[in-house]
Amino acid sequence: MKRIFVNEKWCLGCHLCEYNCAFANSGESDMVKALKDVKINPLITIEQKGNVCFAVGCRHCKSPLCVKGCITGALTVQNGIITIDRDKCVGCYTCILSCPYGAIMPSEDGAVQKCELCVKNTCGEPACVAGCPNGAIVFEER
Amino acid sequence: MRYVIIGNSAAAVGCIEGIRKLDKTGSITVISSENYHTYSRPLISYLLCGKTTEQKMKYRPDSFYEDNKVALLAGKKAVRIDKGKKQVVLEDGMEIPYDKLLIATGSDPFIPPIEGIDTVEKKFTFMSLNDAKELEKAISPKSRVLIMGAGLIGLKCAEGIARKVKSITVVDMADRILSSILDLDAASIVQWHIESKGIKFILSDSVVSFSPGKAVLKSGRSVSFDILVVAVGVRPNTKLAIDAGIEVARGIVTDEHCRTSADDIYAAGDCSESIDVVTGERRVLALLPNAYMQGEGSP
Ligand SMILES: Cc1cc2nc3c(=O)[nH]c(=O)nc-3n(C[C@H](O)[C@H](O)[C@H](O)COP(=O)(O)OP(=O)(O)OC[C@H]3O[C@@H](n4cnc5c(N)ncnc54)[C@H](O)[C@@H]3O)c2cc1C
Image 1 (tube, rainbow over the protein chains, first blue to last red):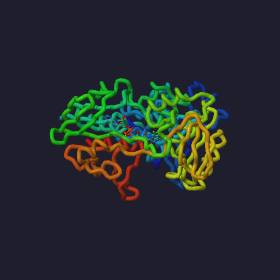
Image 2: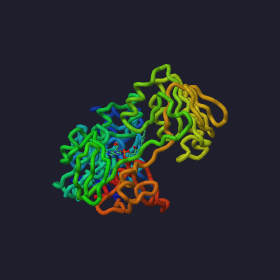
Image 3: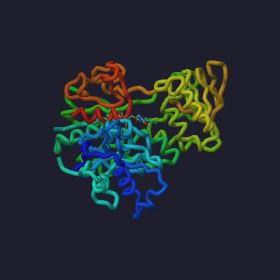
Image 4: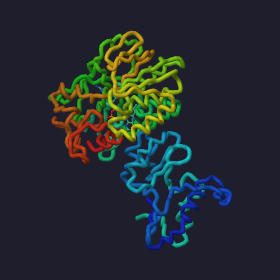
């Protein structure tokens, strides 16, 4: 299965992946409308210290602690993609505590949110990858 | 291979999913005293306050048993494990043979032997979907509810019914709420928040006797109530293991592979105890992720 991988050597720290992610998952068709005056809450985030920076998002682990620990059954693996049923999630944050990468986060409506590789929006392929200007985020089989 | 699991909750589901990763064809039989599809126990309070529904609180999809080729015996209680004949005997006399057995019986609420407690008519525990449904039937906007125990379960119950009753008083003998997980400073912050929702606490005190509609506390104070919820703690459900001569301390004693002292019998979840990697000591760590992962690791 294809997954998102990052190469910190190529990451410019431009945060475009965060904006592309927020836009892709906004349900809007116009980027300006989607992001203007909005404090974005993207599913991928740039970790940065000194000269080192890289994007961190869900790695769709093969043995995912978030899914095993989910108290409601809202997190499941569907065709290799770790998926959240936001309707079932009650926001207990057990997954946030158990994810070793910090890749699951709270959302505005109480449920948690996470990267689902853009399969539930209209992008088809991950928007963070498509929009990365330096090829620092890739979507490939390894 | 014939796998038999007693219990139908997180540890059992973990075990089913763990088995099916390794063995697609062996038969799996699940014996469940609760007559329900597997559901998320922690959600019973969310059900009462309207944040979930019985359908949404199912822990796995409707097709779960079919998808995993599991025979579910719902509403059936296991009463005996016969290690010699390698079979589990049900209340109705049915005998279920096993090659590998998992005990995933969870825990039972502890009812303290307090004078007069048997005479309390509207008395509830808060551990199961049936408990939640019965409590919901009993409460009204006029109810004055007394909850014994300011632990996670007592407070979850309070959260679930807070908007549906007239008043809630929580009594606990500890000097703070959530005493097993919070220190005094943290507990006082959480207490302040809960009090702002109208829930009252009486701490460092405990009920010594009940008379009709009234609880008398150690301090001499008394509390009038219509409905009592007992949430002072849980006990690992170890009876089957004890009767079968399996080693039990506080919970059913298990090793790092969830094996019990008996051949081909495993235990997982709230009924069992194992080594806590943080402290290196044996303990029952009654949390849902532990139950799932112990169940999953046992096959
Ligand atoms: C109100 C509440 C809130 C909670 N909130 C959280 C939370 O937020 N996070 C968290 O991690 N944990 C929480 N927990 C704890 C969590 O529910 C348990 O750790 C978890 O359910 C344990 O799973 P288990 O499979 O070991 O056992 P259980 O869920 O207890 O299930 C055991 C099952 O075995 C069945 N059984 C027992 N004996 C027999 C028998 N002889 N024959 C047949 N069947 C039998 C029982 O009927 C039951 O269905 C909460 C618990 C409660 C009550």
